[in-house]
Amino acid sequence: MAHRPNTPQSPVQLFRVFAGLSLAGFGGVLPIAEDRLVRRERWIEEHDFYQTLSLAQILPGPNICNMAVMLGDRFFGLRGALAALAGLILPPLLPVLALAFFYTAWSDSPLVSGALRAMAMAAAGLMLAMALRLGSGLSHPRSDYAIAALVVVAIAVLRLPLAYTLLGVGALSLAIALRRS
Image (cartoon, rainbow, N blue to C red; front, side, top):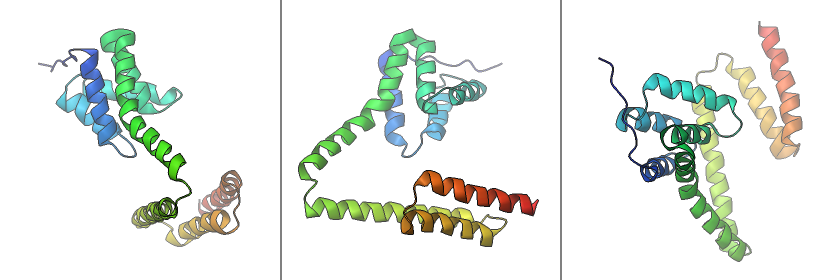
């Protein structure tokens, strides 16, 4: 017998669940959303989640926001769509707005400048660590690392705009890939 999905009890419940998703995911909530909506809440079945995600991907905007609108609309119409989207957007928006307010008031402070530089270095370090971890699976590590180094030099040293860097290094990458095949 097929398991029948539950339905949310109210737009408020939709808001709460999507607010929880937005606070649980840093850098992407789709895996968390799949677990919560399919397994824990059982609002939709797994194949339905992936069909909704497929549609959300071809629409403009962030996939998870599109999914929130579609699922909210499915359960409670416009009120549900707005509740799910608000739940997804408002919780992270409020702290960001508060930080922006404090930044404008304290942006000249050496303490704030130092903190921002430290955060930028930490973010760069995290990105480098992830790149190195992912790099262990490269099939052509020398040329792939050389391409990555070119991107760093073009942006950090030569201060080329990202669009020009991607066009130039992308063309080089394509030429190398064509030569390999």
